[in-house]
Image (spheres, helix red, strand yellow):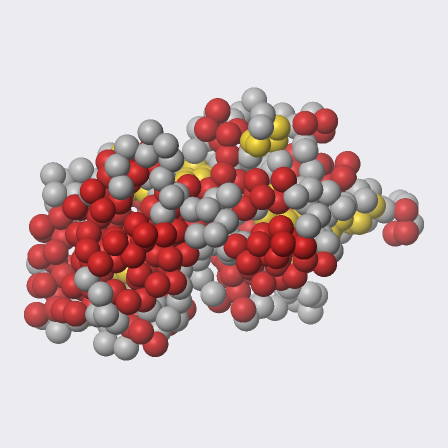
Length: 441
């Protein structure tokens, strides 16, 4: 492998949650206790064989979302161990962008690690550079899954990761008690949404908690507003039918971010607030709303507030949300793994209904498979939208080249400048457009 290719791959890799889905919290930086064990959630069933005859597989969990994932993986891993007494599972919440970059450069990946499928170009880059294993020969049952879920893991017709079973999007979480106190209801269109902001601000209540210090958390409003207001323009840009600057509603999306900052709709010190800080402000009643991913549903559900959820409506009242599959359970096998057969057994387990139901019971994600029972009524509320639209990050990634990462320009340049009132929404689109390479018509 050429040194340039490895360095390029390493510098372009991103965290999983971000998108995650992208997503999520940073509370994983403070690993929780596990009864005196390490913070792995791993279990090992008794075996009649000596330990040295067991096959050991090492799995990396998503460090950024450890607070959400530790309990479901603890239960799942215990079940896997009971079903596979000949396999010793070493599961550590050790994966973030930095650790994965280092492992890729040193060619020291664990047996299994989390990937984001076709949400970004990164899995394909790893496949092209020989880092991950083609799973075609492991007889993995795909009968429960749709073509869309299969496509998430496919490169050139071959499968490279366990399949997704949950849907990710961004929604508005709101405090029902604060809404009731100020005679507010869930907005039915975009103008009503803006009116809610102003009503709360005039009443001395912070409308939206925002983590302006966190690259991903501060972007969630853009991820929510873009498909609601500019989905058709994003589609045309991705298809090479128009430029980003040809879609006036995209400038509205970015101008709204600046307007919210300028009008005081975000908390006073939002530029210095991190993800956990914004979540704390919302769950403690200091802000009426927070825009976050469905992957954070369990965090807010367990906070004790009177919680409501709604998707952002457009000017006509239609709720078009960004769509992507959750990467919480999508794992690849490193090409360097010496125990690929055992690793494949873990992937088969992640693909199973019983493992996915455990994840649902703990997290309250939105299932895409009919045999997964939603955790509660709140999950059904998360799924109340009219149309699944585009993910702006994925669109901008598609308009990127190795020399110009358009998605990074939005995340690292445009959004911070908007929040600091340095540029307008129209200027933000122009900056992103200059970095974009459009496909030929």
